[in-house]
Each structure stands twice: as structure tokens, then as C-alpha cells.
Amino acid sequence: DNALYEPMDLAEARKNIEPAMTHPETANQAKTFNLAGKTYMLSYKEIAGGSNKADIKNYLIKATDAYFKAWDLDQQPNEKGKVKPAYAKEIKSKLTQLQEYLIGEGNNCYTSQDYKGAVALWTKYMEIPNSPAMAGTPKDSIYNDIYFFAINAALLDEDLKKKEAITMMEDFKNVDHKEASKMYDWLYQSYIANGDTVKAVNTLKEGIAKDPNNKFLFGSLINYYISTKKVDEAVKYLD
Image (cartoon, rainbow, N blue to C red; front, side, top):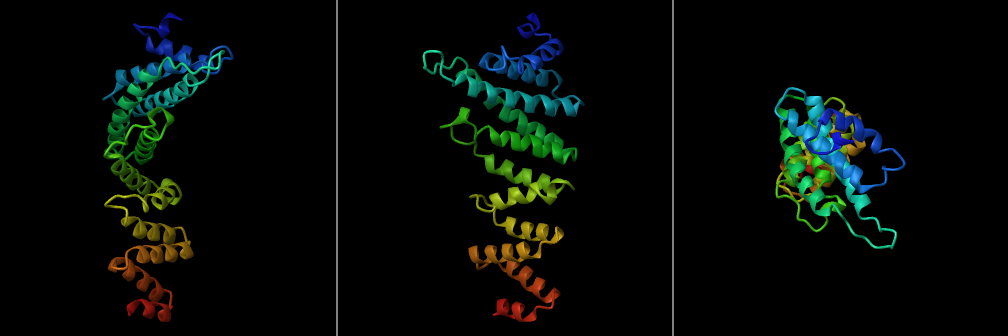
């Protein structure tokens, strides 16, 4: 359809590209998903800076996922068994641009207290450097900063803080980042809030074993034992 080519009628293009991504004749073509990525990316640019936050998030996530799929299909061998990518350079370029948009719009969500939106966009950003399309390309220097911000956002959301935030913190505590050590205290508080005292205590002990000079974690563990009438255990950590 002409709506899928420049100059694009984006509303019509979106209407046409959706069924194309599932139709048997076009669903296995890299061209289809490359075009879908372009459609959603242009749709985002058309409304960027506006008040339609739901579509802004939706278009960025759909564009990213479409380019991931386009990359996978573009790497498939042809009828002669040879891999001859047609869109690799373009896909990598677009994914690089999308990283910037995802970070920026994630920040906009965060500042407007849409913490779920911030987490969705920042974690989608994090998928890009880890995708096959970007293999061999060094991660952005702010990658782990964004990861840390995503954890902050997840902890501020009533739903995400109970599970998703914990999963991210369990991973981030092993990351080489200046804020990684904070994860032990944050995890302790999260496990206590969830009623999982065993994991809460084990997390503090793990943090102390990793950093024996962390007086804050020692204090939390001692206070926990005192508050639960386990004075003998508390005394062990007072020596």
C-alpha cells in the first residue's frame, strides 16, 4: 500500500502494517518488520513532546521490538543457504537512535511520576545493547546508571516493588557500579516488607560477607535480631 512509503500517511501506515506482521505471506520477511519499525519510530517523532504519553511509550516499544524482529529475519539464510542481510546497517542505526529516545522518554515518565512507564522504557532501552543486533558494540557508559534509575522507579511503584524491583536488585548487587552496595539494604527492606525474613537476614549476611566494614548492614542485622528477641544472635555481631 502506498501509505507504507514516503511521504507516509502514518495513521494509514499503522493500520496496514499491523496485519502485515501476522499475515502468512509477509510475517517472515525482514522488510515487513523493518518497515514496521520505521512506521512506529516516525509515529513517535510526530507526537514527541506532546501530551499523549500512552502512544509515546507504545510507539517506542513497538518500534524497538519491530527492529529486533527485523534483525532476526534479516539474518536468516536465503534459498541458497547464504546469509545476506539487507537491513543490518539501517537497523543498527535506528536502534542506536531509539536508545536515546527511550532514555529521554523514560525520564519524562519518571518526573511525571509514571513509574511503570519509566521502568518499561528504561528496561526496553537495556534490551538494545544486549540484543544480537548490537553484538560487538560496547555498552553505553550510562547503561548501569539507567539500570539503577529503573530500580529506583520500580521501588516507587506499588506493584513493581513487590517482585520486579527485587529481581533487578538481586542482579544489580553484582554489577560494577558505585550504587551496587545499596542493593543489600534495599533488598533487606523489600524482603521485610514482603514478609520474607529468611531472605531479608540472608541478604544482610551476604552484604556483610562482601563488605565486612559496612557498619550500616551490621547495624540493620543487629537491630533485626534485637527486635525479634534474638539477643544471642545480636551479640555475635557486636564483637
